[in-house]
Length: 169
Image 1: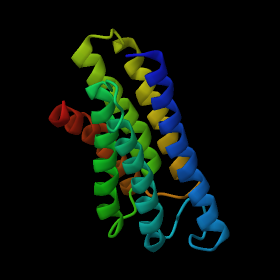
Image 2: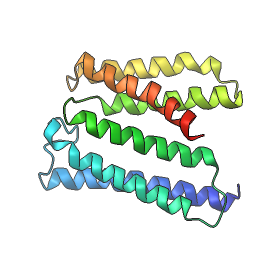
Image 3: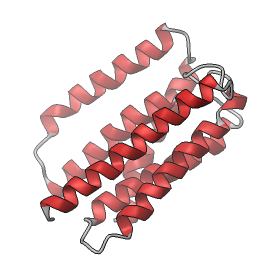
Image 4: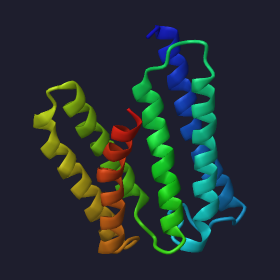
């Protein structure tokens, strides 16, 4: 992959993350959401939809390039969008932890690509579990989630991302 394409991909992905954060801040300021934790389940639809929109725009932008974008990157962004859409459906009934979905989803991606490409990262797996455990403990400790909410978010990320990547690749 050409270095210019790598830079472009990085900028597109960073802008989509920054736009999502800025939108959440604007939603809070305009009272669209009560707090940045989006603790009220009924308020979660709009932030999820906005993040999905930005991810969709990032995917559209990257697939529209007249350059080669590795299938793994496209699959990763697509899987992330599908998982977020599933979480959006779940969150209408149940407040799963998106922090846990994110951290275990990243861990699931690492496990998937480590196995698929023999990256030799097996020694780092305990670190991933330790990091995920720390995030779970923090979410419970500050009282923003219950154990079932943390578990559902964890399972969505840990199993959802590798399954979706396996389907997409």
